[in-house]
Image 1 (tube, one colour):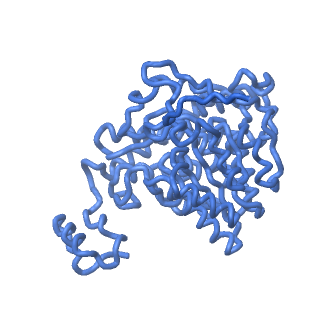
Image 2: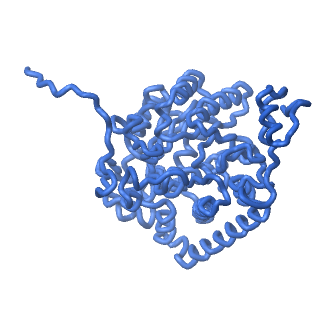
Image 3: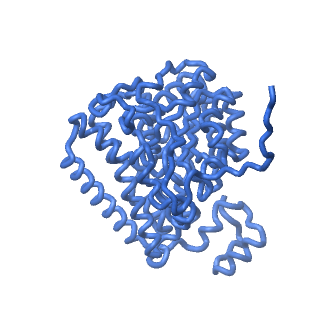
Length: 435
C-alpha cells in the first residue's frame, strides 16, 4: 500500500466565516430530539461517551425534529416541569437580558466603567441555577456554591438576588456591597451561592473542585458548580481541576460554556475543531454530557441529572453547553471585526427566550398576550431597580466609594509602597490595614 504524504505545515485553525462573508454553521451537527438517551445517574463515566458526542435536547428547533415535539416532547430528557416553573424560567431569562441591556446602556452613558452580557445564552445560567436549587429539599441557594465567570449573571437573577444590588455593583456606587473592589459585573454574593468571580478565567475550576473536596470530607453532599468558557479549557487550571475531580471524585459539576468565541478567538483555537469539548471529560474518566445550550428544558434536565449524580456519591460530571455569544465579548469589544455581522441570527439553535416562548404557546400553556404582559412587568421591574441604584450614585457623579476602601482586605500590615499610594489619595495607612 502506498501512503501519499501531504504538505507538512503548521496548522492554524480558521473560522468558517469572517466579516463580510455569510455565516457558516454547517459543521454543527444537531441530532434529533430522541437520539440522545437518558441513562441512570450511576452510569460508569466511560459509558457516557455517546452523550459527549451527541446532544441533550428537549425542545424543537431543527427540521429533523419530530412534529410532535412542537406540541409535546419525544425526548427522554424531558424534565416534565410545571407550567409555573417554565414561566419562571422564561421570566428569569427575560430579567437577565433586560438588566444586562441596562448595564451596557449605563456604560455607554459614562455612568459605569465596564459592562458584559450573556445575550443569546441566558438559558445556560438560568436553567442550571433553577435545577441545582430544585434537586433536593434543604439544598438551596447558599448551600451549594456556583463558581462562575462574568457571563453567568443569570445565576443571581434565578436565585432571586436583588437587581438593585447587581446594578449598584456595576455602577461602583455607595450601594456596591464590594465597595468598588471588583470590576463591574464581577459579583460576589455568598447567600445566593455565588462565589467571588475571578477575571482570570480557569481559576474558578480548581477552586470549585477544592470546595467540593471539602464538602465530601465533611460528608455534607453540597455540590460545587464550576463555570468556564471553551477558550479557558486550554488553560492549565482547567486540566488541574479535571485531574483532581477524576482522582478524588468530589460532588462537582464542571460546566464548559461553548459560545463559539473567546473574545476574538474562535473555538477552534482551543481545539474545538478536532473534537467536542465534552470529550475532554471522557478522557479524564469523568461522566460527560453535551447539551443544547439554548434549550432551557434540556439545560434544566442535564444539570438536574448531574446534581443528583454528585449528591448520590457517584462523582463529578462535565457539561458542555453548545450556544452562541450573540453580543460583543464586553463593552470593550467589537465583534464585527472578526465575525460576520449577522451571525447570531443564523445560529442553528436559535434564541433561548424565543424557543421557550414557542414551546409554551405551542403546548397551550400560555399565550403571546400573557407573555407580552410578563415582558412588560419585567421591564418595569428592571427600570425601577436601575433608577433606585442610580440614585445612590454612578461612576461620574453622586456618592462614590472612598479611596481608602481600595486598600482594605489586602494586607494586614500595608507595605511601604501602598502607604505611599494611599497618602497620594489623602489616606493614612501608617497605622495598619484591614484583614
